[in-house]
Length: 255
Image (cartoon, rainbow, N blue to C red; front, top):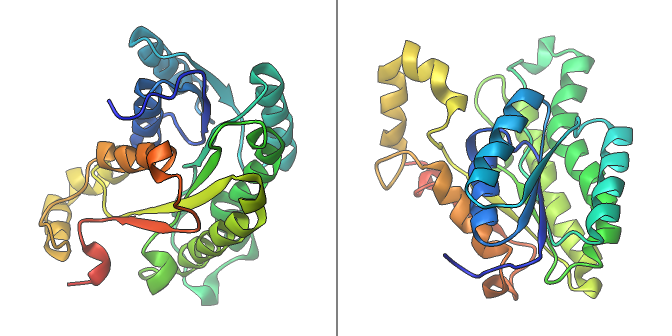
């Protein structure tokens, strides 16, 4: 399955469910030793068992990617244990809620920016010394259509944070090119994950209508994001850096 990445180490943040776990599972099947991060320790333990049972070398580290001290100490532990990091996948992030700007609290603003942008800065900075010791080392970030269209009602600060991820991806690529470290981003469209479970069960007609805005006429699957990440961290993508790959079935065209 794809390029075998023997003896390589990948760190995937927010990896206890949805897209993050599918990415961890795919990288594990590609041969990576996978370090899963999350804040749900019970889910983390289950996911590691699932990977281990499938023959993947995996471990879970519970820490908050918005907490600078926790990120720094945990990445130091990872780097010292394995001696290298070959792939950092900054999957953690989210909407964080909705708020119009007039009533938006500073606390809400900062929490969304921290979840989506601060986290990328903290993890990337902490990983760079160990990525320098990796082979074909790479960072993968996650942005969104909201980074271009500024998001739907109440999601303006989410869109702002994701625009920041788009920019920091390119900035990191410039900064790290001299070390041969590539930095790219993926921009998933509407993916059928537990993230949408509530609206799927309470308003199935709304959920079903989402496919009408997608050229290919269906929602994406987490595995379809994972396969693109697998490609981007492989030698097949060795001349790709500072790019953002849309994984949305043409949704970005806004039909």
